[in-house]
Image (cartoon, rainbow, N blue to C red; front, top):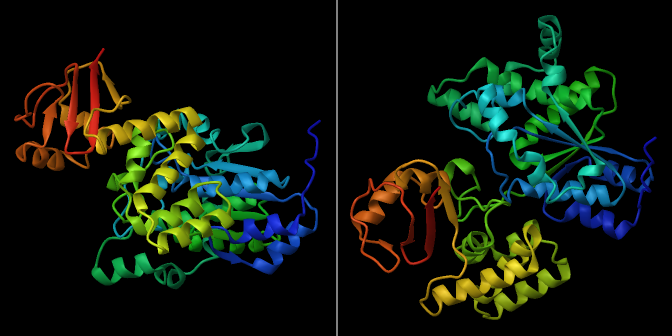
Length: 400
């Protein structure tokens, strides 16, 4: 029989949970009262496996789940293997393509091992929404649809913008919030968390739960994390820092961040105390070189997802490369079993944004073979070679 976790009601820890990195809570006073009550809550997060790698933006709600776990609450992680086939339109200004079952299965392969870098897997309830959504009858779907109006759907900013622009909106996109809402019924969620762009879907859970005569879940959303280029962090834009990036790549991406994101990254992505982050903010305001603070940030992130030793090696390699002009000791490796074009491999690994970006670098003579010549052919095939791309990127290609 599973033992009930001891519920921690330390008000200081609860207040930090309710404020650090949080954008909005519905309803904050009610959620705090529930957390202070000593009752074990069921905390829901649903994730559609639309990509194979979890980036640190997606890790923000996972890290908040870990805070709930530490207070003794039950985390319910919903793998959206059904909803991923429908596609969430929350942050999209065009119709999202449907994923095939094969694509979803491929993306799911390493999800649990990645999540285990953050959550205590032994205390996490993993469920798949295909188990209940695929069993809904057409009649039940019609009943669910009665919970919402077309006006409510079109009031969403992205739907309204698309409608006004004459851009196609699929009916299946209207179904997504209902499905996510029904997930909350299926797992009996007390709290649901997600990105601030998910607010409509999270509130849909409250509507559907009320329809089924259940208490309405509390909702918590988080601040948006910008990627390495200053836009919202997104796999499709190639501006992510993945939690499975090798230590050197992870450290290097942090060092390339916009300076005005330093404090936000410390707050949302690390375990550094709020008091220490406030001290960092003061240092930056007094003229401390942002590069030195980013080194601390890079070390924190690499230690979090790898080890302290890896962080030291990555930092030393970065210094050797960019302050002394040498070649780093640790270089990301790409293993391939066939003669793909280098451009294709680099785009797949996120080391260049696109094939167009790669061609631009080659044309500018910004790609060189270590101890060799400048690369002049943008369609160069993979071989056993170490490349320097621009001033900051190195990659070792190994044909197995």
